[in-house]
Amino acid sequence: MTFSTIFALFTAMVVLASIPSLSVLTVCTRSATSGFIHGVFTTIGIVLGDIIFIIIAIWGLSLLAETMGSLFFLIKYLGGAYLIFLGIGLCRSQSKNMQTEGVVKSSLFSSFMAGLSITLADQKATLFYIGFLPAFINISEISYLDTGIIIATATVAVGGVKLMYAFMADRARLLISHKTTKSINIIAGCIMIAVGVFLVTKA
Image (cartoon, rainbow, N blue to C red; front, top):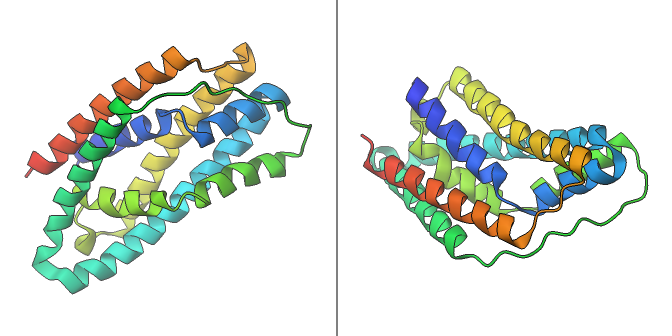
């Protein structure tokens, strides 16, 4: 993987992790009601869930690459098209107020499991990585080093964004307003479209 490929992958994952979602709401809620450390453990659970999906996607795509042979490059274009479609959907989406609710004081393990459960329950994450990773790397020739780089990139990108949300929620008892959510969706959607176009047009 080249530096530009890693940077593009990192940027796309940051955008995805930044979108207001159930995982963001959970991190903010845990951090705001139980302290920053609970937001940290929730983030760890979310990141672990993403790593599991990445590993599953890579193993499945490796088998698919052997089956499809030279036609496997088509998946790269499907992945780019999917990102463009996702970006358009974000720009057109109607945002809703994300109100945090108080939760009873709980253990750090329960916060970790909350993050992990939310991620594993999202079956669309598997389809996202299946359509996403081939645009950045040739799965048929993927090495253990490439796999490690992808996992490290996801850990820093997703974990960093969720920790930022946790920190803001802990310090400011952050409530994401309708206006803020809509702005974030539009910005994230435009960036996602740009990344999708880049993936489709790059050699």
